[in-house]
Image 1 (cartoon, rainbow, N blue to C red):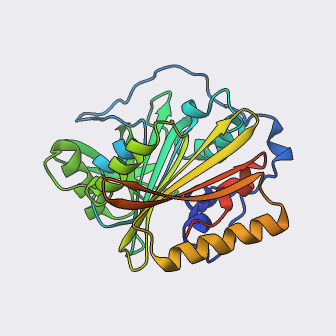
Image 2 (image 1 turned 90 degrees about the horizontal axis):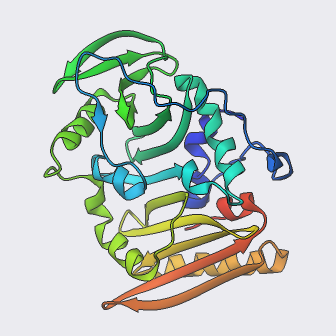
Length: 292
């Protein structure tokens, strides 16, 4: 699988403008991806601060991500264990082994209108096994100038990487001071609504904006028995969005793509919320179905 697909595999379900292939069929995913490194703690040997922040879900990641996010994705392989998503999540993250020579257990990507992005990875075992050409310090954190891919990296739980040095520094500012405005601020009302309606734990999570960035949504994918279940939440959905989703549903029903495709409208403290639920044994179809 092309490593770049790890960054872009969820683009299609958010923008619906290009076909992105996972690179392996569901039949090929009946065996788990190889774990090339034994599981042990390891350590980061640096003369400076190391990042230690909660990194269990997309909310944790957004708390230390600069605002202005267009969309973001989070994969937690530990949460996918013992479910139909286990092999799927490993196939998505195992190519990142070449980035660190270690197993990536959780990965987060945030994308901006400018084309910049920030990524965070939780690896085990810990260690510095990537190539770098120099280093500097920012707020007592060692910033490595890494190669292949080129960019700037700070190690810890999670590792933080960006090709934009200024964006990386803004992230470190948030790590040092939660009082700074972070990416969570743009989605805080959304998460309050989702937490009222849904207490499930999702190994794959997405947040994004639509309609000239006026609308926001949350999407989660989890395993339930032998099937993948995807739930998406849209506070104050626009008529255009609902029309698009209904077209997707009608086409899916016509093609018999999913076992179930439901659209429900509810109210949460005066806010109209659209809830879209998709169920299928075909994980790829569930993940890649357009969301907006």
